[in-house]
Length: 211
Figure 1: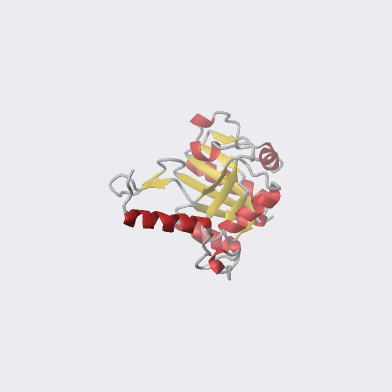
Figure 2: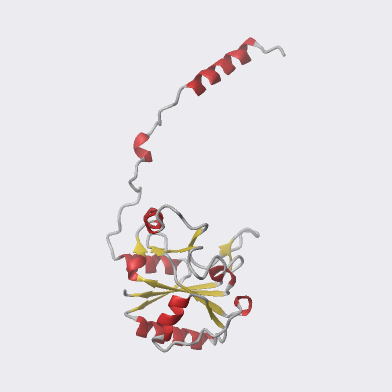
């Protein structure tokens, strides 16, 4: 095959470029520092502000006794009779404080599902969950309403902090899925009209316990 002199010249330049590495144009941008400055306010307050702006519903609780009281009130007001909770540790913690409203065992037909989480990201108002949790991959997605129980000790500022914690917690053997849920499911794919709850829960609650 005949190659024109101009094309051969271009190919020579490409071959030459591939034999030597090109230095990064902005090496400092590849460092470990975040482009976002640390929060100047309480992480719980920042999370609550971001989360509620995304149509999430936030409840702060001093302890598990208050948590159960708040849960019972929300469940009663909304008349949720089918409450699903798969995580044994969470079920025990709630039962120890006289909460027993999770007798429903069918995720597909439940009114709401209660789970824990890995971390809460204050800057984005996101809930971080993983396949390593007993709730698995599906509970927080399939239920029409997702209730997440979290502790103040699980608050981190940025997404990067959550990923760093995950590497440390699981010693490099990361779960097969780490997901960041930021408010109720939403899409604007259809005629640019925002629809909530199309690919996941229509409502998301975070009950943050001071612990």
